[in-house]
Amino acid sequence: MKNLVYDYEKAVFILESFAYGTDIECRLVDEDGKTIHHVNPKCQFLYGKLSLDEKPNEESFAYSAYQAVQFGGSYIFFGPYGLVYFTTPIMHHQNIIGAFVGGPLLMMAPDDYLYQTIIRKSLDQTLELTSVKSSMAKVPYVPTKRVKYLADLLFISNSFTSPEQHEQFDKAKQLMSQRSEVVHYIGYLKTMGGTVPEGEDYPLDKEKDLLSLISIGDQEGANRLLNEIMAHVYISYRTNFDKLKSRALELVVLLSRAALEGGAQVEEIFGLNYSYLNDIHHYHSVDDLSCWLSEICKRFTNSVFKFGEAKHTDAIYKAMDYIKRHYMQKLTLEEVAEHVFFSPPYFSRIFKNEMGITFNKYLNKVRIANSKQLLNDKDMSLADISEAVGFHDQSHFSKMFKSITGTSPKKYREAL
Image (tube, rainbow, N blue to C red; front, side, top):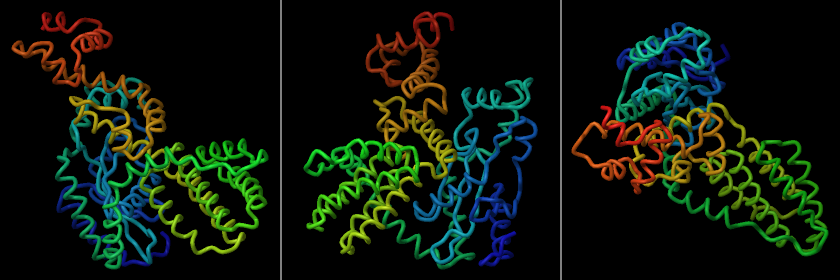
């Protein structure tokens, strides 16, 4: 165990009081997400009985602590197989030195997709659906609203471990009030392309390569190209430092756009960019500006693959939950991507990679699955059912129903 700068015995007392008082499995982890103390391990049987190799890992716990700081002190996230966790970080001098993690639990009813995912990923090739269902039935089910209260309660309990952090989180919550501006900021990034310095020698091809390297998280390559581009800019504007700073600001916008396309989270880039756009006014030399841009490049590339796998798992399950609660509305990929703080192109890509199906196909499957239940009601017309599950055109509904089930809604109803 690393040398701790907080009262370990007090932390264990708080964690055990919370875990046994709420009957929720909990753990104390260090700043790297490694478990130091595990309390009330109710769901360990899952991984042995179902032969699951993909356990909640250190990366996901470290990621959740980082996110909790961004979201004002507590964070609810999805781990593998739709299991839900919540966390609150232990802070010291504005640094994360550990975290309390509650869970796993279920916040939404398991569905066929989850069961089939477990069977597919199980090391036991003979695992049957009935065994999966009976095992998952033993995982505590906690309604969404109560999970939020549990997360808040753990956060409040944590104040006895690290009293100094409450002031930090109060400031973080004030920053979160700016979230409504994020949507406008995305539009701003999409429209702000910047202008190219006059002259045919500007390395526009290098700029495009730089953006590509940022979007894949290649820090070394991105820094190299940034230096080459800035060398040209310095030569072009060596007699006008204000114009040089303007060009540097345009590059920051371009870099942030590339980071978003690479999967960096919007609120993180929004915060970084806001800070950087204010910092530039303090620089009065080319050397200072160069160091500043290099640091931005480093931070943006780091943001792309930071906690990548954990971030994807969390986002996918949150997207699935959002779809299940809003499928009856006119739901778009852009709306769901905004909900999980990813750019639409990046969200579309990881959704297909993780789910093995496109966003639209998954949405249609959810709608058709729910329409089957409504078809049991003989008093509902096909037009009403179509409207109720989010299809605003009955012919489109019928076409989708047949493509997914192999039969028409009418024949399906007649066979009931």
